[in-house]
Amino acid sequence: MSKTHVKNNIRAFRFQCDEMTQQQLADQVGVTRQTIVAIEKERYSPSLEAAFKIAAAFGEPLDAVFRYEP
Image (cartoon, rainbow, N blue to C red; front, side):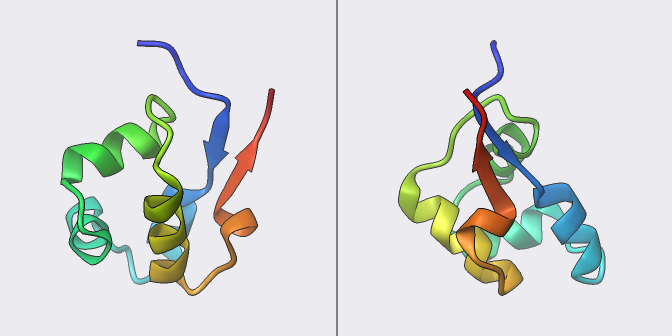
């Protein structure tokens, strides 16, 4: 599976948030842990709604968590 052009800082933000687990983030966002793993490893681009929910879980703006690199 190839990587996407959507890069992220999810792992760094999880650890800044008291070492939030992937499961805890998944529960907040309403997706599976496997989805968070795939997004975090840049194997899958999240939907726009999921991206906003992930950023909100960290209390950060979308562009602090995600960026597009063609």
